[in-house]
Image 1: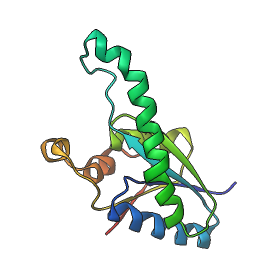
Image 2: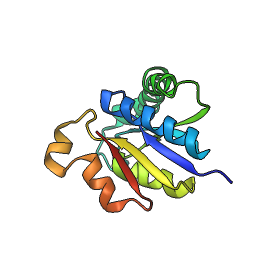
Image 3: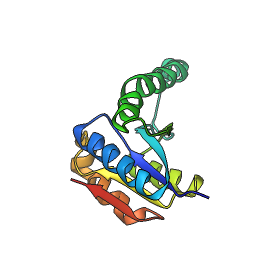
Length: 142
């Protein structure tokens, strides 16, 4: 059975470099690539009734945007290598770690610099957090 490499992608130049690197490595090793985008989404967010009614539509819109913009660009960056794509909800680091476990991946590849937000500044970067909790090795592409 071929190894599975998960590539975290967020549409940034850093994640594009990670996809290019992962595709080259997969070609050498015969591994399969799973391109993953994690949408920051908390199950524990406090919401009022009108927000709860709109949440499923908002979630569907975010998934469609991720597939149409972020994952499509990542597939193109893979340079013709067959890939699989997935959208996951949660925190980026824990989401990628969960995907690695669920898909029995042997490696996670992520760009050093992606889209950052205030949460990253307050709680640490995705790369930093992922390196602490990942069940598999993490390759960070500069």
